[in-house]
Image 1: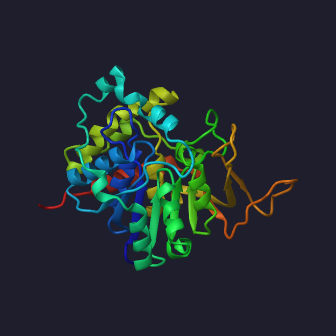
Image 2 (image 1 turned 45 degrees about the horizontal axis):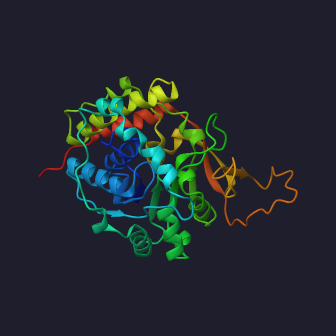
Image 3 (image 1 turned 90 degrees about the vertical axis):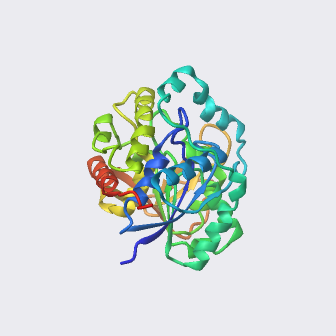
Length: 337
């Protein structure tokens, strides 16, 4: 079988002090499995980092790996949700002295002009039109770019092969919000209710993952430029994430979404109807799931129409996930100049 055509829509932060690096791990995993995945392009959205920063990170990762792929910049703000509070929260770490010290040995991303590569949603539409039913979109940031693509092309849901989404938290202690859905709840609802074939990887599932320094030691930074980049940018994040969550390492949110395309047996799944709470208050952006069979009481609720269920990841085998990641990374060889 031919490799699956893949687009990664993301908000990468590798090399930026205090920013999550899991998008970079996900992109590297897609690159490292060319027999199964053909990464056609990367699109960038504001989320973990601002779109312009994320664009530079994505370009830097590809340059350091010696890979020539198109990268397109997309939405810099949500459909409705104000961006200001989220940017204050996400960017707060980048100026803290202790964070800057922790990232002192990490090279920052090179500078690129995101304005020269705008048009992520348009390119998504063009690609699925060119290859109907063949393109899988792995959406590991806020879903604004995907929602824009659906607005541009009403038939997008039928043209795209599958959308794998990392986002939402059904019931994770301490999390009233999950970042990707919280930054753009309306976009999440647009995509989840589109009728596309969707696999949802919520925080409930990714919270079952873990990568420690000992796990990262499996990757020899001298084996390739890509391996060196991953080790360099991941080390300080493991420490920061471990301290914040009081665990032994960092979670593997975004790499899990890509790894499921390589080995679906990493996880268990449940077919459910999923909506997103859009009203204000404590439940805004929260995903709500049910099935027609188990729905017992919904007095006065205006249930949205749905054309299909969503495959929700429920259980994750972390050791299988780690094996997929590090076996793939170890197989990567830098392209010959």
